[in-house]
Length: 163
Image 1 (cartoon, rainbow, N blue to C red):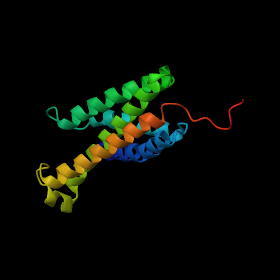
Image 2: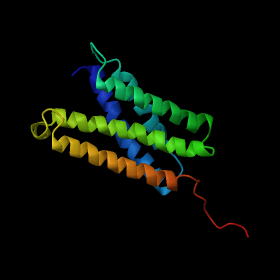
Image 3: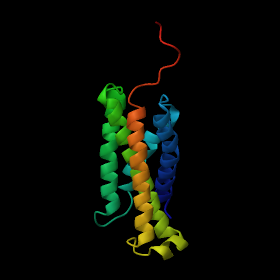
C-alpha cells in the first residue's frame, strides 16, 4: 500500500468516526463542536486525495467523490457563509449526512472487497448480502437524516423563558 493510499484511508476513517458525534449532535439538537470541524476537514480531504490515487479511467469512486464534494461545498456554504440561518440549517444537516453516508457506503464496499468472509459472501458485489448491507445502511441514514432535520431545525434553548 502506498503512503498516499494509507493517508487517504486514514482520512476516511477519521472522517467516518468524527461524523458519528456530528450526527448525534443533530439528533440531540446540540451545538456543533470540534467534531464537526474534524469531520468536515477530513471528509473534504478524503474526497480530494481520492483523485490523486492512480487510475486510468473514471471509476465509480470518482463519481462518489464528486457527489461528496458537491454536498460538502453546499454544507460549507450553509455553515460558514449562511451561518445555519433559516433553511440553511436543514440544508447543512442533509448535506453533511449525505457526505457521511457516502463515506460509510465506500467503507462497506471496501469491506466486501478486502475482508475475506465478506468477499466470499458477495464476490461480485451484486449478491444479496452486499445489497442487503447497502440497503440497510441507506435506510438507517435516511431515518437518521429525517429525524435530524426535524430535531435540529431550531437551536436548543436552555433555561426557562421569561414570562
